[in-house]
Length: 213
Image 1 (spheres, rainbow, N blue to C red):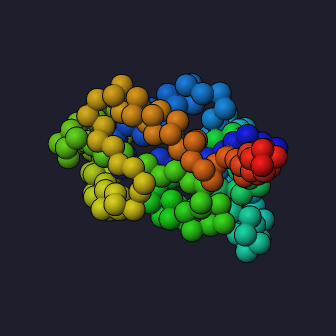
Image 2: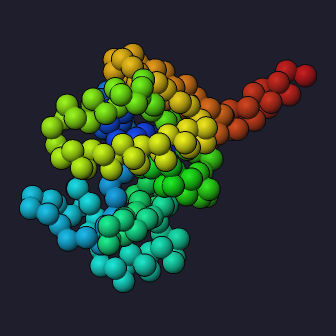
């Protein structure tokens, strides 16, 4: 019997709040933590490997998986479907491994409402301020001013759902936020529902108690 059931760890934030960096640090911190590989109907880009970067599916296959309940969450974005396949997540958490999801609030709600929802740990990352969020997006040097403006416009929609998460952290210091994330995950791993072997252990204690009578 597995000593611990794995967690579905959901990290959400507006773009630029530090979610990607924190996700990478968590994966480096614990080899028992893996990143959920999404499925998509878009074509692979140069260098992308099926099963490593994405699971590349036909639209027909994707729609069938959704209809059969094989996607924990899914969305239609810029002309393509994206989603999180259920089977590899179930395999991982049954083996006691945690799975990390980098998704928005809509995906988070779908997973929390799924039959694996009781094993989720949802965390929202807030920026220290809106000017600092803009500064971080600009400092990345990856986007045009127009794209940054669109990301900033979308950021409030993301932030407005902060209260739907189990934990909310203000990322004004990356190292401190990383430490807080590790503490939260370590504690969540000890939740009663994550320890299926406890029931048998308590039964054994009861038998031992009865033997003393």
